Image (cartoon, rainbow, N blue to C red):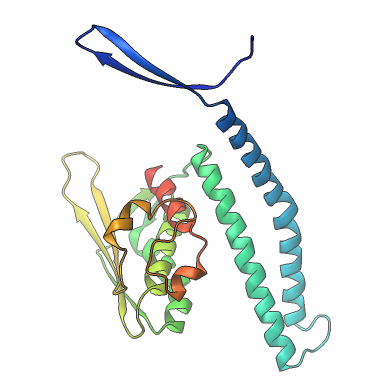
Length: 240
């Protein structure tokens, strides 16, 4: 009927018949669904994040006493509201980030940085959460000069450390080990391992762990706190 359609092709060479076997799928509806999803993401970005940010600022001002002194109960309630708003903003930012990364909108900004600074900054950001859970973080590495996107790599380390702390039993430790690996290339490889004493991931769910909105732990409280986007963002950054 003269319409243009989006198609996806799979082709395989067949030696017997000396021909190419093709399967063509009409994916027009899928493309339309993707377009609608992008519109929803844009709406979330503009119509939800902006008012939530404003609400967060107002709650900050209330806690600072700008609108008058609150009693202990008032401070506690405003503090809880502040945490809820902060969680929502983080979830929206994660959703926008993972969509942008998957659509190829991730540009890396390489710069020289010290491994010591990278690790220490990540540990510093996670330490309050670790103290709250009575979990200690220990590091083991020899300092190296790296050429990386330190901001995004820091985000990966913070996310993995935060997960490790969240799922660790009380009074245990999380280890950060950095090992320089031998490489045949001129560029050496540095392996960073974050090891915790948590329950781990069931073997049958390993393949799902980096999918969006998937939480594949064992159903404890730590699992319910997350949005299921953190590891998807880590994967996109590491692959880039």
